[in-house]
Image 1: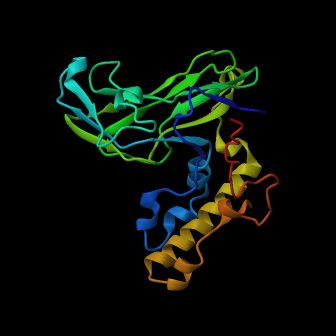
Image 2: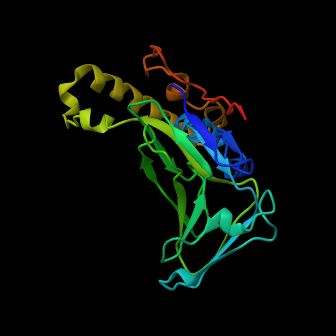
Length: 247
């Protein structure tokens, strides 16, 4: 499946593959965040658009367009004013970033557009959207809401948007059923085996067994059931290809 990105100009922001790491993950001496495979897979599950310049957003808490101001210590690429990249199109503390690309997916595919996964930002929240990119002939925007009166800074090179294709209307084909665990004997036995193993492991940690802390359980990370049976198709690493620039 091809995802085509048409730059509106030579000054469009950089588009890169999302990395598995986040800046805050390195603050843990024990490296616990790097052991969470679902976290790293989600982190790298798409592509990011990077700020071409530093953006300072200030909201005084008011409901009008004029209550939110956007400035930059220097122009964006091509010496364009900051309004070409980030502006206030809405009210109530919402800042609008222009992605400056038209994205096209193959028929039957949409784009999920949001802020970078697992990247909390002080006093700002990304507004997520799903775009019907298999027909859209114009660019969309990425919006962030300032949560409380005050300032927010996006630094040059910081990702302000993350996107990836999703199957169109796949949820309409999904039927969610709630069942009793005891009615699935095989799953129940696997769960009980995991629960006992996990309880014993945590007890050793609480008792100060340093060897247990070094040899953390890797059932999910390794893609195997608690009984040792390995799972087919398990993904341990996701590194997407960098965009190919054909301009």
